[in-house]
Length: 392
Image 1 (tube, rainbow, N blue to C red):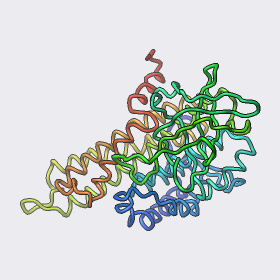
Image 2 (spheres, rainbow, N blue to C red):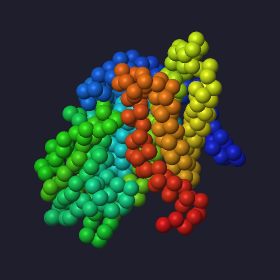
Image 3 (cartoon, rainbow, N blue to C red):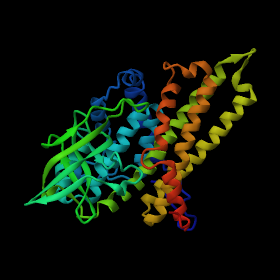
Image 4 (cartoon, helix red, strand yellow):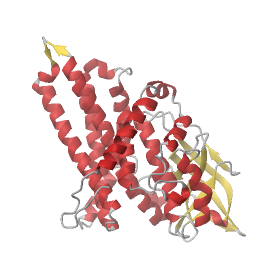
């Protein structure tokens, strides 16, 4: 387990158990993911059979109590798994990140016993996936601007609205989506909407620049009728719920970005040692060597920020401390990952522009890291407020 010394906040080390777990996830990714991702990416194919294998490995249940089929482990372990999957392919990494952070976590954190018993076992086992319907056409960074509406009709809730960019929402194994909606008094609640509910429509998958293997759809709710027990958590507390969910998600995205940056460095080092110009490996040229030295330094900083934030969460640090650490980690790591893909593509030269090389896929995948789970601008806003600045 990652440890935090209370007298030296944020100092930590990963345990031998974590590193052994890293080895097992890396072997899984190299065996089950790496040979197929180029084809899956070309075909925009979501490999739901792989989700079951990830479930068998216990990846979806890392932070879930044993009573629901999970391992009852720590958040740091989840970040290790996301990092290692993201090192091979970002789409598979985000499938796990969103599957746990946005799918399982809302139910685990805010659900009642009946909701947990109904949904968690299949989600943990990889037999099902869940999504989190927050973003709307007019409510992205301004998530509080939710326009989806919820009203009471007798004992039921009726929900109307539109969501967009929702991950894991339209797969063959998607079982439920948590959806935020606004009441007449302006407060926001979260509702569990099972797949197949009348009026709940999943739009065609997006044609995306990157994350082409990941499942992402718009959603429409047209008179969706839900029983009272599908309210998730306390009525009117949905805004506070999703803010808490996003803090955890930002650490996970930082781990995903870290995996991508590592992959870029590893492949660039290999290529720089093999490719020769004017009779010498290009890695002997200062222009290349210094670029990779800077990248290695950024990766180490991203690693420390990511696992410091994870350790703080695992040790139960105050929410405002975790929020600040999560925002810093996500901001730095995502921007470092985008820079890493630019460096790697430059090192590979013309080959880096060819889809047959993974760095081209990494280049496409990276940009969303600066957008999803809160843009870089939002992270800077969160950090500024955490410093006590009166930022609007």
